[in-house]
Image (cartoon, rainbow, N blue to C red; front, top):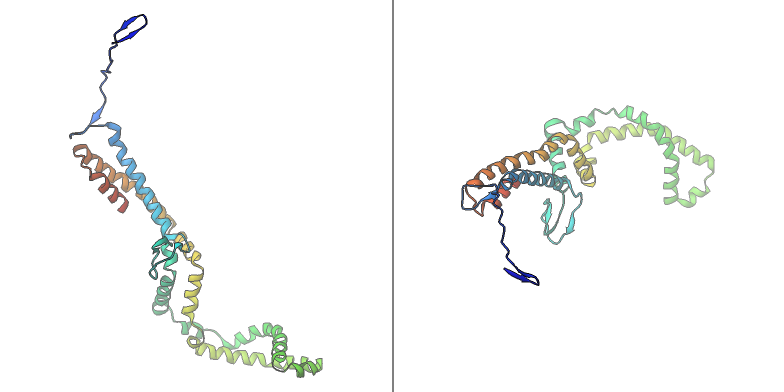
Length: 255
């Protein structure tokens, strides 16, 4: 009841007699769409977690964050993250090199296939272009006054003599290098250092080689999440324990 200037009006609360569609065999009832939306939410969560996991596998190339404390070859720090592949580039390159040189090929055998004589012949033309500058540089460093006083004809003769001896020198040099390649060059150190320096190339190799598989992993997150969501929906239909949702979310993200 309430009073206006013209009289008294009686108000009656109108309650809709149209029943709402609720579902559930438990102490709580929910709208039907609240059940059917569960698999889709679980699927989206599964897809997001898989995409995020793949991105964190490859990115960032360098550590991002405050590197207060960090274990060697570990992507995580106290405050920050580095992609798993870039972080473990050194370890992976070292392992791959050991497997290749121990199981597939021998470095000494590969270098022994080089022909020292042919190497000398191939390099002779290129060495001739450098001999003049090399002799000039060495002479100016160790005997600058004498070199400055030498006639140009004598300098040219020295270049010609050095060029005539270059082929035999290069042949002997290459033969000795092939014989002692492991003492002269650390192939493993060169390979590992190059992989660490060019970590983005390792990431590119992984992405290109596993492009189809990574695409499947991304979308499988939705499929598996949807399946777990259906199971969760059925359980929630009969039992609405408060612990079901966080446990279900954990299982979706973990799988």
